[in-house]
Image 1 (cartoon, rainbow, N blue to C red):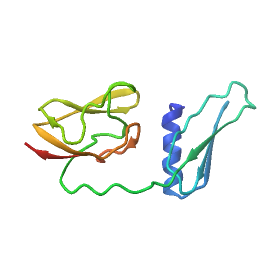
Image 2: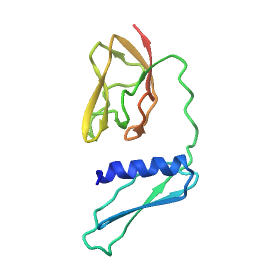
Image 3: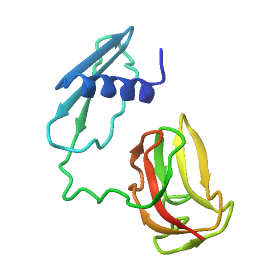
Image 4: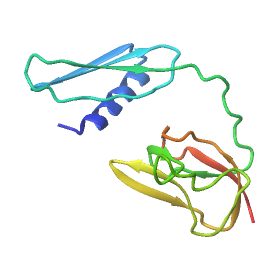
Length: 153
């Protein structure tokens, strides 16, 4: 069986692609049900292996309407090399690696993208100035998604 979080993500992808309101997966003692509520943003999905055959875990995937969509980047962007969870700081209570308007040196860490429980540091390939941060902390990002808008120095 796949890791529960990976399985939930795959089921969510299948449900979105097929515009399903609900999807359910059953295997041995595990039941995973994803329920989508329209016009809301993905918040979280979790699953628990059932301890007893009669136990069912239901996961509600909530989606909230975005107040305003951020403007599309107009300049150069730093894109995520892989799909995962975007983190602006090394720990929850730490300051972000970079802020908008900040000058960045070659090799400086810009963010972390967590994929399959591995923390992947994304670093600057050259000196640059961060113009905008395009992803929210804790947001699931896709491979190739723009994370920062910058100007070369």
